[in-house]
Length: 280
Image (cartoon, rainbow, N blue to C red):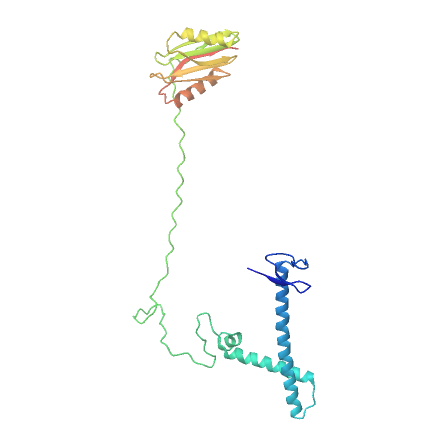
């Protein structure tokens, strides 16, 4: 697409191909500015046309006034032209359907039907009998009695989650024995799930030595270390099938509590105490 411009020297060239005049080197204006200038020129030309037409009408009216004996006055002629233009616009507005004057005089609603004037009488149409006791077929509306309120059901409380059943421990005796003999240092417990055997150690100065002693005391091939501690307590509980739970704690009771919880988490049934050992 080409954009032909003329430079200040009068040379014509395509501004889309080159932004400078190839003859004199004049720099072409930007495209937007050029289009803006063309728009201003078109607006000015249109204004000149309107002004010329107005002056011609004023001159014609001025000639008519002089022809009837009225002294020439350009102001009066211009006023007559303006009044005539306004009356012409109003007349066209009343005559053209859809214009603002036509809508005002005819009162056209949104559905496109004209509203009758106040002096017009509406057509005599049979009105529907809306009396409550009349139930004839001529009624356009059926009898509707008072509507009974719809009962609102009472809110149903949401089911509360039930706490999981606590694991009931089965003790051989009312009292449980605590190993360790009050020794200080490291301790450990090993356990065999196949035979439900256990081994313990306490009072050791190193962790490795106490763990080896607990596994050796257990004496079974599948013995595994389940608790290793220093100056605290370890506990192991199990059920008849060998499912067990082991835990540590600062007291025998706390260690047993967590051991029973671990046994229940492993799906143990009726877990009972196997061994509790503490060091200080």
